[in-house]
Image (tube, one colour):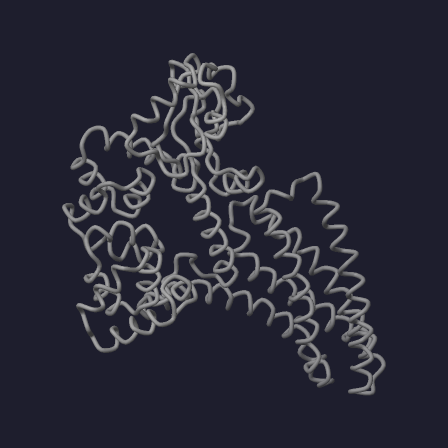
Amino acid sequence: MANALELSIGEDALEKLNDALENGVSAELRSMLNSLPPADSAHLLESSPPKLRSLLWRLIDREQEGYVLQELSDEVRHFFLNRMNIAELKSILDGKDVDDIADLLQQLPDTITRKVLDSMDYQDRQRVEEVLVYPEDSAGGLMNVDTITVRSDVTVDVVLRYLRQHKNIPKNTDSILVVNRNDQYLGILPITLLLSTDAENMVSNILLKDIKPIEANMKSSQVALLFERQDLVSAPVVDQNGKLLGRITIDDVVDVIREDAEHSMMSMAGLDDDEDTFAAPLKTARRRAVWLGINLVTAFIAASVIGFFQETINQLVALAVLMPIVAGMGGNAGSQTLTLVVRGMALGQISKNNLRWLISREFISGLLNGLLWGVIIGIISWLWFQNIKISIIICCAITINLSMAVIVGAYLPVVLKSFGIDPALAGSILLTTITDVIGFFSFLGLAAVFI
């Protein structure tokens, strides 16, 4: 079982849980399962094959189901949501934060979402619909409308008495949001400042006006960067007219960071970032077939370059032996640059102003590495085949391929992004094809001319 579970329930409890699973002890299993934190229950569900997953879900108490659903990946969550009726969905959503309700409803067909919304009271439905208006990957989609707001023309004492009237204060509340009579955002009043200021002070005299709000249409990845750079716990969200809509809290941003990391990792292999580890074989095969087919097409492109030099290869077997080295070195060099640039783009570090410098740096680096490893591989080739021409040719080919590979690795993500294509998803496949073609063409082309 995964480390996340071990950290939470300990090895002894984990072993008991595994024993209960193997022996089919439903009562003991139910008790242990519902004693876990929701994140650990979700991890256990995601780590189980479909049949066992369904069994475990039936053992989770109804009041726990909503919390567990929030922790599941989109695909596994969708698996359970599609099997619920309106009454079950309504009971699960009761008492949840507005942003969490919106996240769950966005997984459902529009007709089901409408029925669930219609079953809510007017106030709750209005609050959820305010969030559903915005895309899931935007600040508006992340925000929670549960906020505490005050006016600037009241005293600190009034604010403190107002806070005491609340039975519960929204989680991660580190500041009170200050608005005018039209609900337009004016600034924030940190809790620490509120507690350390004289009670007779006016809010207008102590509120922080330099804290900029987040526009509702800002991308979630940009929101995450903003929280990271400014060490935020929460941030106000406004519309285009400056009207306060809600706030984003750090727990939602952590989810964005995790999802972005999973997306980058899975996309590099051409997989969906919501891919279920234990999905059915047919479903898994169908998803992967698309990118395998694309990879096959690119492989034929590289193979056609080899076919063009078939007569040259037939004359000297050493060329066939050394070809993979040239292609492999170029592919590795290009992948290093591609990964660096994709990361830089994700962090917002790369722009038109610094791209030329970065490409120049990568070219010089690729050229130096090409010369270094070209000479080393050339010496090894001479010792192996005792042919000085082949040694010189592979040295030149390695230098050419590494120099070009890093340029392609730097430019490719920028070009793909300009066409609206995810660089992490398509970059590695295209890069491999291009570096293979350049490597084969330079190596075999030089061999055809000089041997």
